[in-house]
Image 1 (cartoon, rainbow, N blue to C red):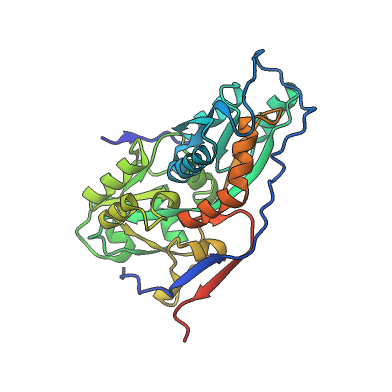
Image 2 (cartoon, rainbow, N blue to C red):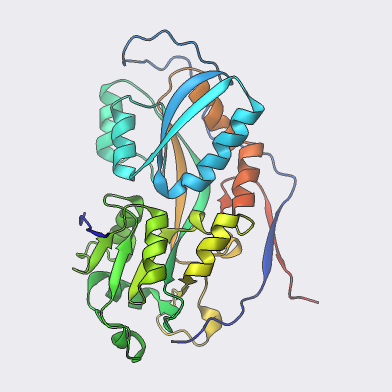
Length: 334
């Protein structure tokens, strides 16, 4: 069941196969080893956790649930005395948790805005932000949909309601009205579309929230007239059985930033290489934000995620690590 969302052509030709390898990289911790002089103005607590032991809660933008589960599972295997309880929810709720001191670490796709920074300034807390990865947003349609190539401008027309019928996209009849589907209300995906794609224009009236990312994929898989937008994180690790299942149910659209593409090669899907080269147009960054004013478990986990082992997990997932040298290999060359 979809809920109304709150407002704040041709087949793709086989693309050049590319592979990304990490080479001899030393990962920076991004300033997450916090200065001990930061003041903590929250409730008086008997802190017993260390960077590798104890228990804390963190909140994560649910768009990044797969990659954060991998990070947390690996961290806890390396440090059995550590217990990190992650709650996955819309970005707006994650930031509310951080401001309300319900958590020490947030994982979101943006840095603090002016209002949030002002609140931390009032509390005399110096939050630390580190970039974890480069993510992208994938456009997905039903496998029967012939419109698997879209320009950014056509996509903008669909999301604003200027284009309301699939017949307006390529002239092909049969699919009827376009239903635009997001993951949840108040999600980072919705914000990204309104900030970067529609540029402040109102969303189409035929826009809905599926209540979760898997539910979005299921809806698109069963409704030929639907178009969804989802974090690449959910479909990027092609070694994962669940991801393989998702990819069998939907078609990923090739997107071109060019207003008048000359060939299907101008349309890109959100592969890791195109995210790294910054040629795929729908990209965004993933950040860890910590309010921890001492070297506790939040600091330890954030440093792990931004460090060597955590960044290798990012690489394996199909996203682009925030730090470290990378090499892109064209495997079609002879």
